[in-house]
Length: 111
Image (cartoon, rainbow, N blue to C red; front, side, top):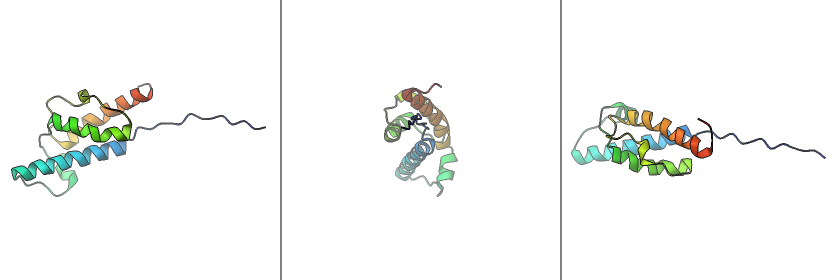
């Protein structure tokens, strides 16, 4: 009779998926706002991401809802910096570690 020991599954924060969702949604929102205001934007996502353009905190909060299916729980609004961000890249650099920290806490992983 052989016995096997179940190894605990290692859980890894889905950083690439979360970042891709945040970036795509933030860039789409910026493009829509620019189109409504008649503002010309660069054609590449990386150029839009790095350019100085205000990302409102309310927009960032609404975009969190699109990340929640990936991480499996609801994020509190307070992960978003009050006052917003000066670029898509700044928003992602701030949000990604906050979301990961919440994810670890939710999964019971010591931070």
